[in-house]
Length: 317
Image 1 (cartoon, rainbow, N blue to C red):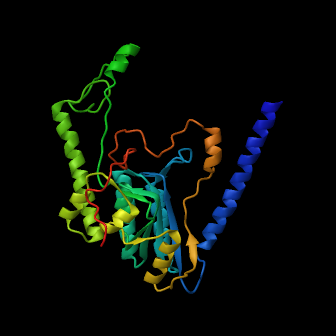
Image 2 (image 1 turned 180 degrees about the horizontal axis):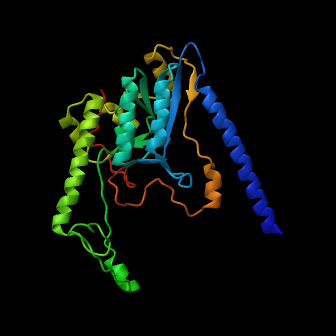
Image 3 (image 1 turned 60 degrees about the vertical axis):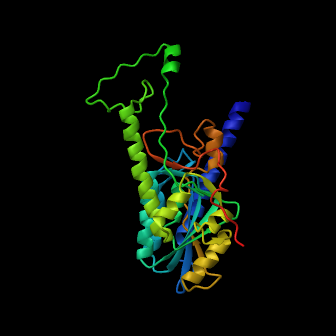
């Protein structure tokens, strides 16, 4: 009886949350034109680990690049939207996912819209790649950002497989088709291949930041050893323009677009069909998405253990 009651309550709560989500989504859709006739600032949220394409609604810690790009395109098409605040709360993600969103930010600016990146708890690595393409970057003093770098990880599980009695036989068309397989060690030649991939994406990352921030690539490389900076340190180093919260970012976007310091605001936030609280209850074992398990993708993510940034930080006098 108790199990039936609990099940009924969970189903009822999920149904209510779905209805509320649909109502809010409808209001948000209508709200894009808020301030008709005088223009508005649209807020686009990017929260979670970035992947290309669309993220599964059951993996609420991930954000699909296509979901964000779709909202940026929507803002670009709307003549009432004068500026966009991209609210970032992400440790990074895949290189391709970050590039897709960054290119959409470039197109949005080419369409004549002002873009302000607003950093929450974290906007590191791939998220910083995206932020660097904005007209202005605003961070909280305690935001974790930077982490300009690239990582590929592979595991050697031969010892574990041996203890479990697992043997792997591989049939392949070429010597490197299974490179990175956990059932065998990486060869010296494959180490060179992997490192070459990392260095290629790293060069693209440095160039994107240098162009977006109008900095010398050589200077960016001095900061780009993968370490994380606080928002205040990042401002001293030229990686961030202003310190402030989301409200300050909206004010700045309004001023840049000619709407003044208190512009009308519309929200274009990606919304899950099923809120995270119920996903956590229904699927307690699902990945959190904060630090994704390494796979075949090239990741741009902030490390769980954050190194100090004092080597490059010199307080203003």
